[in-house]
Image 1 (cartoon, one colour):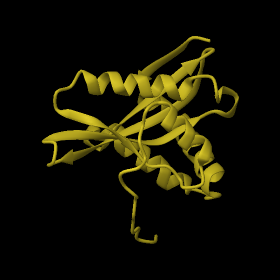
Image 2: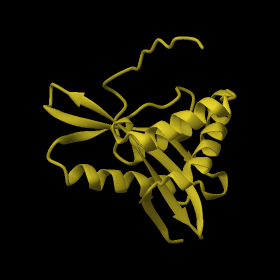
Image 3: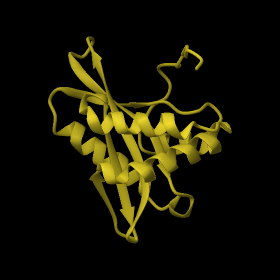
Length: 152
């Protein structure tokens, strides 16, 4: 199966929103507010400093997507790209979609002197995703994520 990766366009926003709604339900049984997720995706397309979406296509369809966002690291005097909002459609899982997306992001990072690396966070009980990330050489041993989110 041929897999291609491209930068997402505003025309992909509906599919990205659908993927995010499915991912939130699958991983956390969380129902996202379509208005909020739609506005959040729109905000990325309107302001590239917020991030950039990438789309994987296979068999003439959108098979998966992810978002990269940017963190400044004073320790490295470089940017770190965070992979977020990863989703692969169920019928395309275990077929190299995420591996291809990840390799594409790695290639971008390797071409930029001002980007030190890639990070992501994963839901603690999503063991399948954790195994995938480890198989790609990502290391989850250094940090544990803590957060505080304001309730809406």
